[in-house]
Amino acid sequence: MAKIGLNNFRYSVLTEAADGTPSYAGATKPAKAISCNVSVTNNEAKLYADDALAESDTSFAGGSVTIGIDDEDTATMAAILGHAVDNAGEMVRNTNDVAPYVGLGRVIVKLVNNVRKYKVEFLYKVKFAEPSQEDNTKGENVEFATSELEGTVAALANGDWSKTKTFDTQTEAITYLEGLMT
Image (cartoon, rainbow, N blue to C red; front, side, top):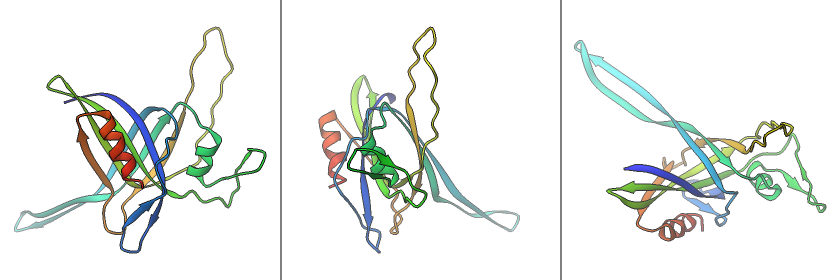
């Protein structure tokens, strides 16, 4: 299996029931996907007895996700970061703003035995942080700059933190991904 592409980010605001059952407000496409890096942190414990390893455990502790997008439009940034947009279309950042938890998914294009497959990767609970801003003047050559958003990945109260499924067509994959957020 070779990964050959990334596309179709989708997010939705999460409402989590006390038992960990998630519900979402409908899938939204934030922008075109450039990159995605999910870094998982695991708990590790080892018990030694009679001078040997008797038990060990490795379990999900949390993680982080960094997504690269081609545009940071006002409506998306306000929704993901918990900011307000006023009647003039201005996004107002306030120190008291609280970013909501969102579900975040993407489609990864794979090549398996010379056949394209479309793998959906979905994170149930992510909270994004305000991104840093770096801007440069245009020089002799134009250089594209894009935005990255960093988020914290957490597990739901029921322990679920991620879901994945592979499809034969991109249409099936996108339909499935959007269905996770309805």
